[in-house]
Length: 611
Image (cartoon, rainbow, N blue to C red; front, side):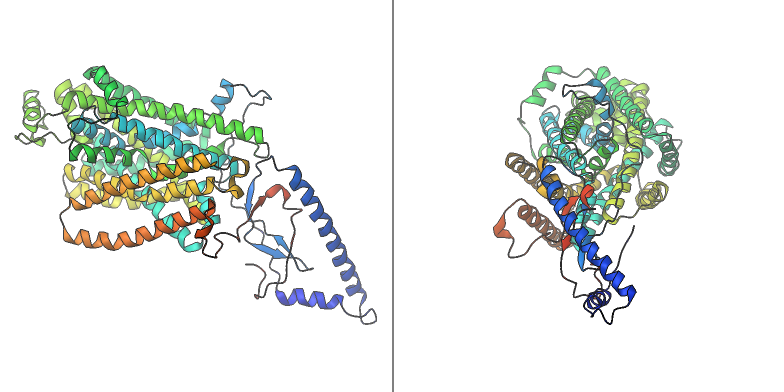
């Protein structure tokens, strides 16, 4: 970083020196005057060049830099202060050169990777638990909600990818450049909270999988500790190259597809009921439990920190952003890859929902207890002998599969859960790295970052695993899903805001139709999640939670109101400006024109011209 600070007194003294008479000037001052006059002439010539280049580059989506900070030259002219905030990956995957605009599988292969890494968030242990509960509670009836949530997620990921490709900045970077300091820090804290909550779910899922695979020999707290070690092991794979790391994530997805697909083939769900539940948006005979589960499905599928992650991942491809055709091509191929990746994740989720819908919908605890006892399962006492509807989680789900379909079904289920937990752990680590770099311009090593987040995530999880039962540990997933739902507006509102700003997106800015669609999606998702959170808190039946929730709700709604106000103003709703400019001091200009950009201004009244 190079920072030039030129005080007001020095600038004034230079100006005064130029006004002295020729008789009192020294030779040195005479040379200085000639140098300054020459510099002013150069700046005027550069300004003309800048205007000409600006006219020629209107069809190019240039790389953006922040010119909030400036420096002053000896003539009193303001120059842009270049500060590098590059947080992109060191390795860039080259794209095959071709002047043809026709579809190319070679190019698609080059762009393949970020979308599948992003899709891991749709397959984390929290999602798997939501899937099996959906099948056990509602059968096939709300599969259409899962499909709709996946489509909504695809639309939002499209906006995220376009922001990263067109601007060359990830969402966290743009937030830091556009929002004032206090909202920016608050937004960073909310996103970090979502990352830590997701990390806890991954730790819980991995610990439960290890416990099941070891037939209970490794306690839950032991599984929690093991997840610390294996996370650092996977970090070492990063040095072997980005492509190999993407291949590792593809392997984890393949493991989940095979394991959960095995369960699907073993159970043999009713295909007609499955298709009806997926494409007919009805829910005959559904009550409050089914409604709550449908709302929970949306909250589990659309993860807030995943929006930040994808905008950073797409920067790993070597795209010339000064070439409009290349940017258009990159947007198209990233969208195709995202469709493929989310289609695979959707199929895996359908496998899980269908297995539990076919085998365990409307089952009672007494029925399951009897089957487990007859199969000599050591876990039959998990299910009380009563006629209450079966309630399952990722731990009980594996046990039930083992009771009904044999030990192989249990172990294969555990392998799938372990793959989900481990892959989500790695994607969470990357998300935390990008978010910290973007919001704070603070570059920690991934090792340091993992130590920081893992300590926060593992401490409460480890305490629960040591002193509480498995029911309490798995029950934390419900609380964490609520936490994730609360954080959603802090990703959805910024992504719509910045993809609708012409200063950031230029020719690729959202049109009116996309602004309306994006606004409706965000409104629907936020309303659904507010209902989910209120329903969860109301079900606690504790006065102290009501009081605390009411206090926090005021601050929460005020912050969201600010983000919405900022969004609407940037989208052109002029009457909301209230006489104030939202980001008038933050101009985005092409970095390839910074050498010729000059903005003539007066000397700052402040002590320093660096502001």
